[in-house]
Length: 304
Image 1 (cartoon, rainbow, N blue to C red):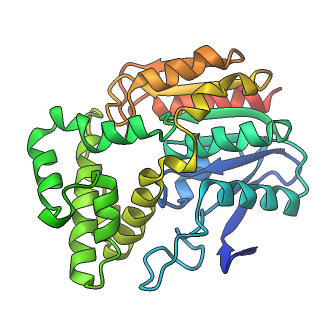
Image 2 (image 1 turned 180 degrees about the horizontal axis):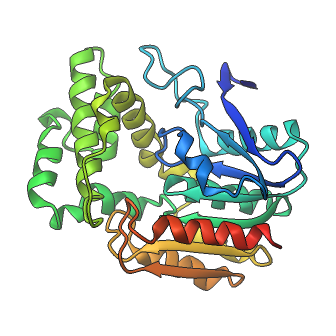
């Protein structure tokens, strides 16, 4: 556990070769936390990998699901500072960064702020968490899943229907009545499971069966989404050229309607030292070739 201030203790772990190439894993969500399987993306002979649970999630404390949770010190800037604290703790000069889904937003924001600390970037399931993207995933994609979206939107009471859905749910998730919080978390996560379901062979995610996970995940997602990741609109796309010189691979599925491909495509146009790999069998939940593509990109950078 690392004390990062503001009352937060961040859980981290290190695996692989102690003398290997430094690497960092940034999990999705926000709020998913790291899992043991994510270590397997890295060649343990080649890499020394740091994985950590972002503030409020996983084994970090306090959890965002706590009754008295305060998310005011849980922002993108705070997470970037936590990454730097971990880098300094481990004596890392530069590292290869792997981010997935929300982790791609955080990875991009970290790299634009601390470009000289990044050897290479592998970004999979690419999103920049802009207001336009949040509006898409909470509203517009309902045209593809009308029945599921109607249930999602109908769970918001009339008193909150003037708000964007991320804002309305963020309010419900902190209601004084625990039953209201649980219902909102359940409906939010049902929608999360719906809009990633175009991945071939998709099955409902069992993690949403856990009431505590549902609540912390939904609270953190809505917190970051309602604030558009605490970044200026399209800031990461506008600043893409700041990453030039950092080699990168963007990996994105053709079936990913949660985060449409045009974001990754626009990013690749501004970030000229990156390459875009489009997987024709993958959605936002991955696919048959997804993990192979991620591992192959990491293996290539390990050899540099």
